[in-house]
Length: 588
Image (cartoon, rainbow, N blue to C red):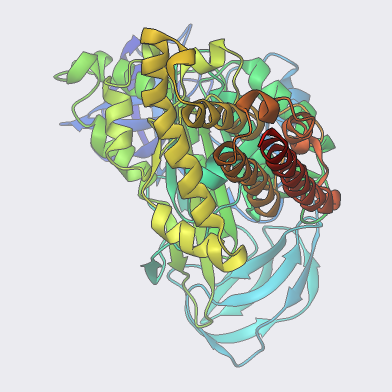
């Protein structure tokens, strides 16, 4: 080990001399407390170290010891269902060791060293394997069958393998003279390898109507949720973590308030995954680096989370990663950059902010995994951004929007009006739209036509509202007033969604299409009725309008009720038109 001496302590930044034999990105142990740190700059044996724990009480003259290896995480069975800090220390275990308030230097391995896992061999003695090939499987949870893969850098004939029960440290196979265990270590700043990337064409179904219908994200895609304080970023992230159609969820609380992670811990175990009927925690990994934890560890939490996500992607799973919020990570970068006395960029952020953000989001994608089998995996990254005052022109938001393909712009005016999710349908966009339209149309014929018509109506509403504000709604034609009545229904009955309602919290694409079809059917039938001389007030007074406003509370198992509602709409308008024709004839 290489040992140096502390010369300066400035918050989370520690400088040490005598570190000539160490390398940049090496993990170091700082002081007698053995605080975890990482070398982020080297100048002629003088190392600048960002420390991932509280540095109060540490002073010049104390020792720094380099481990000689980069910041790495343990990957293996036992990650799912646990909550970790930013450097993958299990918080539940740390609480057992030091109580509710963590002591300096307290640590514990990420993976349980005592638990024995049932390993079922897939490869056989004599098989020639390469990195990424499946050696065997372990049932990690009821939902996740963990694939034990040949590690990167190992290949050759399988010399020994058999079904067994073993800990994560005990060898389960011998490949090309190398003992292979169920645990791997991987440096977090290096993306895990794959054969090649594929064009993402399948939607990541989230169960949120405004997202799936109007601004969908692909499996293996990237999305950003910028918005001011109180606009609902965290609730949307929670909703996506709960209902997104992914095999594994990695949720990172990066610099957010502790009560938000508490909500996750309290709610997720009680939520039943709609696909499997099992608890959601059977497919979730939680990483918590809350606002009262050390600032420097925010960066580590981001890289730790994406490395875990890549690990499950390599097994052929669809993985969704939620990062809430990347702005807090950027603020940590700004603080460390300032303490290093680097030349600042826009608003004091480091000049390399854009490249760091891009490095993170570019680890997403749908890939052909390593290995001789045709195994496909995907990693979708969805990051919340918290621009001060909702200013989307600030550097973090702009750096993010340059790289992500989906923008869900949250609007404070919508949230103030209690319209949730507060995604502004006029400002948001999805660059996957054409591909997702094709994918949804294959599943639900005509889905994209309904979406396009509904979006055209919502855009027309903006122009009509300008006229209404100037001269009043009564000056509009009845056809335009009908359009406003329809867009009001689209906004209040379709785009709004109650995250805390047992039924409305999740809406399948089939239900989304049915609901959109009902609203647009009403619009078309009403338009025909107007042409036959029916008054708009007669149309808006129909009792069916109340049924339309409540169809979002129809359970998924009872979607035929929406089909019945469509028939009721047709019948009601037939009667209206017939009555108007009778009045016209009697008037003659």
